[in-house]
Image (cartoon, rainbow, N blue to C red):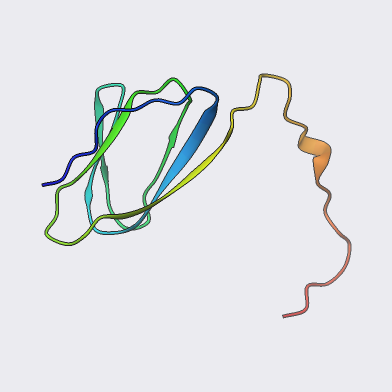
Length: 87
């Protein structure tokens, strides 16, 4: 069983997206079971580690981005287009 060491961010938060396999993601001492399709969001200060608990490789994608400050997110940044979608 492979385990990654604890780490935490400085400014970035992240989404851990599980592509395949199964394991556990630990955030601030809380174990969260993960499997294909799981997504775990972690705030910058969250102490985190991951381990594989299955017999297949645990494949995860980590997407990191700057954490938003309260009030800094602009919900009107996008707009709904009044046009048909062509597939």
